[in-house]
Amino acid sequence: MNVIEIREFLLCSITINYGVLCIWFEAFRFAHDSLYRLHSHWFKLSVETFDALHYGGMADYKVGILLLNMTPLLALFLLGH
Image (tube, rainbow, N blue to C red; front, side, top):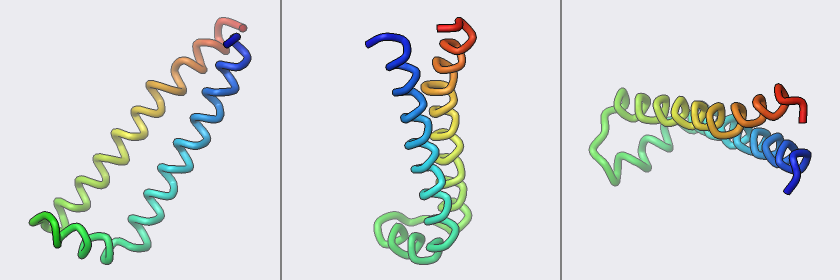
């Protein structure tokens, strides 16, 4: 793979990952109660714990996108390749 292909791959990866993050957020926002009922059958969670787990998971996912996709892409752009 050359540098151009790597940049295109990272751009596609960022797009897909942010799409997944947006879908996760929208599903959490619009189907919160049904998701909570589904998960509360398996785990003993309060609503606050459920919300905190999802919020933390979304934050970790976003940090992962920034560190694993955005940082290498930015480095390639700054190097001018």
